[in-house]
Length: 305
Image (cartoon, rainbow, N blue to C red; front, side, top):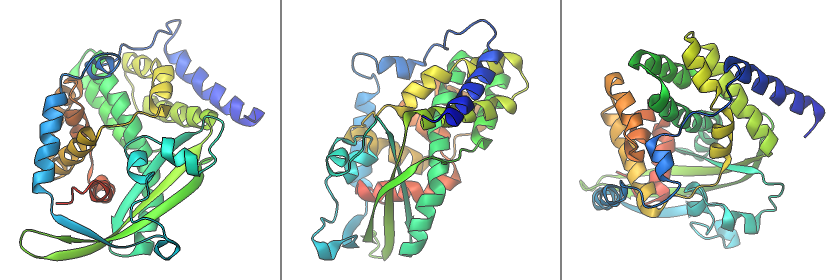
């Protein structure tokens, strides 16, 4: 890492650490994150049932065209679905990804290919912000003492953006799909997927900047300290490659799609984040800006409505 970048990360981390005073112990993880450390999640059966229900209601879909079709590329390359679900093992076999780089996927859906590509790139930063928000707010919900403190942090995290400076665009793929609804109506759209990579130090810089910007929007000192103490935990947690199972992936998409139609009210959001239920957490975090992204994920999972 260059000296300039090291300095930037150190300054941001120091600013966050200053808010915590002498205390440096990270906040305790929520029930859901703690549950991931050992044993089977108590929500597993509900997740599997949600996945089954989602597939039962999915509309029929077929792939009409895709990237590099004339060169013999598969309609859905072997690396794509695992990567979207958080497993980049197959992807790394085809691309030279070294140095422990952090890999993330952006996705979109649009009627025109160039629009889908533009949306995927533009919305990628928003997707990173949403991932950070889910972790930060879930931990804040479990540790902050009052609903008012939580509401302030939730609002600040929702409004905080990220930048993707220093990240490398590694690969992309697109599909033209035709979806047939139960009424017989057909629609065509392009699904676009893009894989980005960044060095671990660049990711730490992004996390530090995000937390610094969140705390800058929060006036309550205790809430500031709680957020600042999360840096090391969130940095490690969000850079780790954690694969969702097929059932978990399908259930989360459907939960978020349903939340777009019936948003979780502000009064119920803290309870959702504190529930330990990953589906409720995902539903609480979704915003209208996620519509195209979720549509592309649903398409690759065969879950289009």
